[in-house]
Image 1 (tube, rainbow, N blue to C red):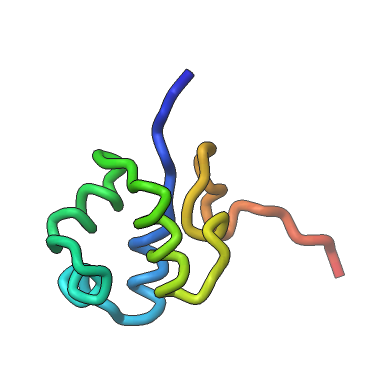
Image 2 (cartoon, one colour):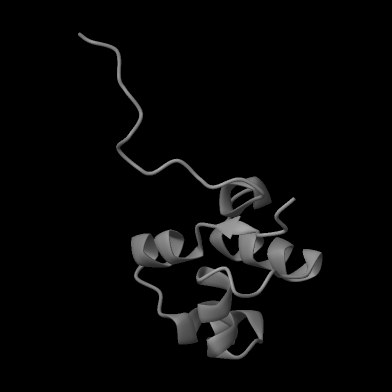
Length: 80
């Protein structure tokens, strides 16, 4: 069983025009921590995961998952 935590941090940052350093400063962590999180090299504590979700004003499940997120644009839409 894989213990990888998948996340959408990079996507959320890009949507909002926030740099790794800006996010790190807001969360009180080193900017490299954000890079490690985005690449899946580091799994956040529950506290940090909740703070990240709160920062982006979304539910924690929007940011983190135990399964890979579907790629954007790969879901089929009904014809019409």
